[in-house]
Length: 221
Image (cartoon, rainbow, N blue to C red; front, side, top):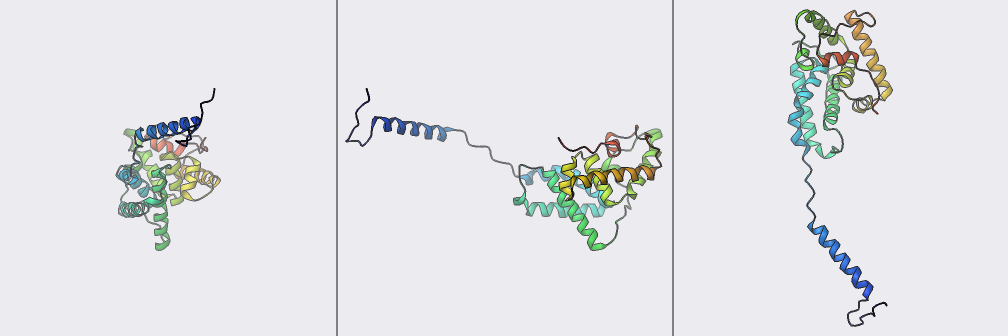
């Protein structure tokens, strides 16, 4: 039997039960633990400085210029952090700012910046021991002769491990362009080193150096 309505209170039996449920739901929400605060991406900048510096050196071939580029990159990132999407990769975002800063510098100076310090060994890979030192020196000299675009794609795809799609987004080009550019870069590097097809001279190198040469350019799954 359905309980009668209560005219004095203005509530029906059904509405009273509904209101009680609403009160309980609100109480439960009030007692739920607060959401964790999202960390400020600025706090992660210091940890990424070594990677940024290595990337800047690989592009500019000049330590002083690389440090200037990194400093400007950090300043730009700091002042534009509100534009960064926390759901995305902070390092990739910083790499994009850095490469744009570097190419902007090239457009202003209208010249190629040469490496006067020979520091690529310390920024990308450890020098191998014993009989591999000569081959490593050949690699370093050959890499220095590549264009900035070819050095960039080998660093992003090979050394840093970004996918074709991620590299394409950072470079502002189509994935197909990244693939073809990486293929031409590896071919040119092999030519500069005088490698025969299928010849393996990198077994004594560090894993990072080997990755620059042999990492396949496959799309991200």
